[in-house]
Image (cartoon, rainbow, N blue to C red; front, side, top):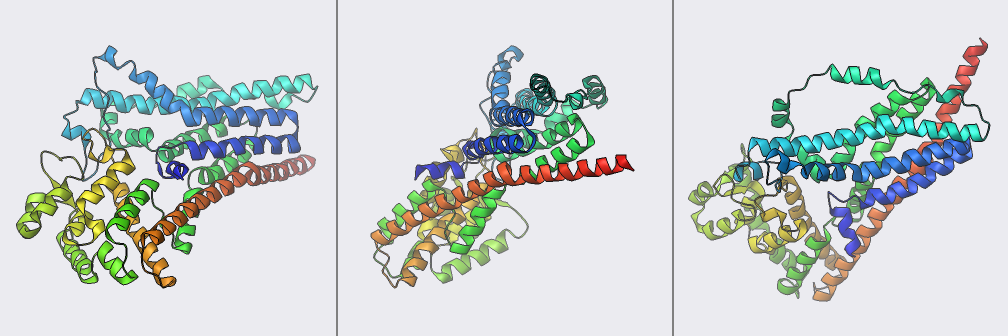
Length: 450
C-alpha cells in the first residue's frame, strides 16, 4: 500500500489534513448543537481558516520570500541548513552567511506571520462575522465588543529588541525544522496560536475554554497517532518500517536468504550471534566518547575491513573533506549479515529519503537514518518469528506473506491513530470544553447572586 508512505514522511501534511477535515466538521456540529448558529459559524471559520494557514501558510509565505532573494543578490537557496555529527551542507558547500541569514530569516518570518494571523487577526475577523450573524438573528451581541487592542500589542512587541546577527547563529536548526519537519513546524506554530487566542478571548471564561481546547489539542494533532502506532507495533511485534525500506529488505531476503530454517535465516540475514556480539562490543569500545570516527582512524585499527569501511562511509556525503563512520556504521562494517551490507543500506537510505541521504546539499539527520536501519532488522526478526511460530522454512512465499501482513498492520495502526485523534479533537475535547464553560458560567452567576 503506497498510502503508507504518507505516514512515514516527516514533511507530509496529509495525515494532519485528514484529521483537520474531521475536526472542522465535528467541532462545528458540537458548537451548533450546544450554543447555536453563531457559535457554529465561529468554529467553522476559525477551524477551517486556521487549518489552511496552519497546513499551507508557512510554505506559501516562504516561497514568496524566496522569490525576493535575487533582489538581495542571492542566487542559490537550494540547500538545507540543518546539521549534526555526520552532515553539514552549509559547511561542506561553503554557503555564505548572507545566504544562511536570508533563508533562515525568511522561514522564521513566514512562521511568525502565519502564527500571528491565526492567533491575533483571525479571531478579530471571526468575532465580527459572528456579531453580524447574531444581529441577523436578533441575538444578544454584548459579548462581541471586547476585541484585542492591537496598538497595545504592537507596543509590547516593539519593546523586545532582537539582534539579527545573533539570530543567524541561533536559528539554523530551528529554520531547518520549520521547513522540513511538519510536526515541529506545526508545534511551534501552535505555541504562538495558543497565546494569540488566549489574548484575544472576549471574557475570562472564554480564555480558560480556549486554553484548555488548544493545549489539549496539540497532543492529539501531532503525537497521539505516533504513540498509538508505536504501542500497537510493540504489542504485535510488527516492524514499524517505511514501505520503501520494507520492499528493499524483502527483495534482498527473497534473493539471498530464502530456503533456510529460521535459525539459519537469522544467521544469514543479521549475522551470526558471535559476529553480532563482537561487532557490538568493539563498536561500543571505539565510540565510547565520540559520535563519529574518521575513516582513516578506523582503517588503522581494522585494516582487514578497509574496502567495506570505505563503502560504508559513502552512505553520507564527504564531511569537511573527510570520510567518517558512525557507531552504527562501524558495527555494520564489523558484522557479516546481509543487512550490514553497505550496498544494500545505501539503496534503502536512498529510496526512503528520495536521494537526500547522498545529496551534499541536503540534510537528513543521523538519528532518522539510524531508525530506518533498526527497522530493517526488526522486519527480519518478524519474518524469523513467523517461521518459528508456524514451524516453516523461510521461503520467498513466506517472506511475501509477512511483508503483506506488515503492510496491512501498519496501515491499520496508522488509521486507528488518525481515527482516535479525530474523535478526541472533533468530539471529546469540544464536549469537555463546553462542560468547563458551563461550570464557569454557573460559578459566575452564583458569585453575582452573592
